[in-house]
Structure formats: C-alpha cells, structure tokens
Length: 469
Image (cartoon, rainbow, N blue to C red; front, side):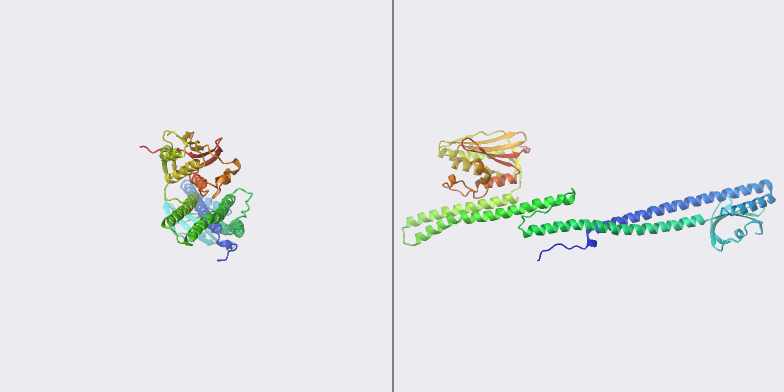
C-alpha cells in the first residue's frame, strides 16, 4: 500500500461532528428556554387581563348598585370613550340585548366560554373589524345584573399577539444563528485539528522515509497536541533504538559467531580428510558438541535479552525475597569459588522483598557471580551483599579481578562487547547485557563502580511488602 499524506474531509472530522452535535443541543436548549419564557409571559399577561376585567366589572356593578341604571349608563359611556385609546372597551345592554351605552360590537361578539367565576363569564378571544379596517382581537367578560341587564368589558390583545409574533421571530432567529454558528465553529475547529493531524502525519511520513531518524516538530503551545507529539517522538526514538540494536545484534552475530562456526566446520572437515582412530573421532565430536553448546548458550542469551527488553515474559511478577534468592545462589557458587581458590563472602540478611520475576532475577545474579569468579585470579575475593537502604533493596557483587575501566563501563553493557583483556576467556559478551535487560524489566538501576581493585556491580530495586507466611 502506497504511503502518503492523509487527506481528510473537513466536514467528516470528529471535531466538526461534535461541534454540530453540541450546537444542536445548545439550540434545542435555547428554544426550550425561549418557549418557557414565552408561555410564562403569556400566562402572566392573561392573568393580569383577567384581574383587570374582574376589577372593571366589579367597579361598574358597584355603580349600578349605588347610583342606579342612569349612572351606570353614563359611567360606561365615559369609560368606553376614554378606554378606546387604551384599547379597553365597555358596553351595557338591557335584558333584550339592546345596547344602552358603550361599544355595540361587544353585544354581537362571538366567543367560546372559557370559564365562569363569581357570576362573571370569560370568553375566548373574539375579533372585530376596527376603524382602520384591521381585525382586532379582544378578550372579554360578561356579568348579568339582577334585572337581566348585562355589563360587557373587553381588552384588546394586540400586545399579546405582538408578543407571540416577536417570540416566534426570536425563536426562528435563534435557530438560524445557532445553526450558522455551529457550522462556522465546527469548520474552524475541524480545520485547526486537521492542520495538527496533517502536520503530525507529514512528520511521521518524514520519519518513516528517514528510518525514524527525524523527529516531529514540537508545537510551542502547551496542549494535547504537544503532549502527543512528545510521546510520538519518544516512540520514534524507541523504534530507532530498536532498529539500531537489531542491526548491531546482526553485525555482532555475524562477527562473533562466525569464528566458532568456522572453527567447528574446519575441525569436522579436517577430521573427515583421513581415516582416524575411534578415540580421535570421539575427541572431535566432544569438541564439536562443546562448540554447539556454546552457540546454543549464545542464542539463548540473545533470546532472553530480546524478551526482557520487549517486556515479554512467560512468568508474571510477584513479591520475591531477595535475601532468600541470593542465599540459594550463594550456596551454589561458594563451592565453585573455593575450587578456584577464591574467598567467597556472604551473610544472609533479614527478608528483603521486591516485586519481580524470580527466574530473571536469578539469571542476573547468576551472571554477575559467574563473571566475578571468571575474571578474579586465584587468591582473590568475591563478595555478595543484599541490603536495604531506605526504600530500596540493593544487590551488590564485588570482586578483586581486573575490573572495567570507567570509560568502557557503558560500552560493556552492550551485546557482544568484551574487553581485550577478556578475549582469552570463554564467553560471548552477553552477561552484563542480560543483567542490564533484567534491570530495565524491573525498573531498577544498574551501577558499575570501581572496587579498587576489581569491579563492584550494584542492582538497585524498589521495595515491596513481603507476603505473610
């Protein structure tokens, strides 16, 4: 599949879709809020209208009760003349529905009954043709007097109708503005995010084309893209390191394993050139088996290092008593050291627990003790220490051998690296590399120091609680 810069449709980006979604939610909330305000306002205005109609009818009824019909006719006439400017209308009719005073249209106005309270009947909005030819909507109430005559009071609903119209217009504009802002904000945010993604994609393409040697440019502004870029650069650095390590291992295998393989082949080839005694064949076969064992040990060490560095392990981490583990290994290597004429010093401390893989830890300490015994001349001293310092557990292996010069200690941790002075000794140069891989697996520190004379190697772990026995 051909690689290339990612091409993403702006309107298909997740950010754009999220912006549209949240804008739609915001628009819905805005519409619900405006509708709530609208209905609450309408209800309040209608309640006020109802109270005004009740007040006016009660007032006119008092005039009728106290001053008679003539006074009521005059009061209705004056209020109707004055109230027309305020969009209030009044009428008074006898029991035969004949207009006695006020606006005649109220007598013929048709509307459905809303409710009746205290003898006052309220009607739904009726409408009549105004002076200017426009239809006017009113809400009105009627009260029948004891003699059968009726008082009509109405209030124009122009303001309520205007409120409805303005509220609908506001809702429409709110929805339109919300949709516009959603598209605009979504497009803007999508373009910003898309530019970051394309920048990262271009950087990754460049890194791939340069064998992961080129890093991504880190944004100046601290945000999630800067954090992501830093993580990607760390990943690229790790990939480059693994590639370099793989190349180095390949080169080292070709260099260090070619000699024993050639030696093995030459020995077998020379043996086959002429007829030999059975004992001679046996000796050659024994040497060939020894060479094969050495090759197998080298490959197994390489496999172990690769598994440890990749974090792949068949065994799970668990609480381990370092003191007990070191005691088991000391018992084995004390005999080996004495056979070589070395003094072996070990004192088992109280339990010291760490969280780790027992087999890997045992292999690391095993390699350190083997190296110490191998490179320490007869009459020397080997010391194994396990102690607790603060919140750390420290495993130390000291010897009085040739040691490692300070300038070569970092190099000694690499695969197949052997000092010139150790070339005469058997080995593959993978011992300290494996110890280093075990240290990385356990997030431990590996320290090589001078023992004056000899080498001092420390593995420093974090403590954990020992399981109860």
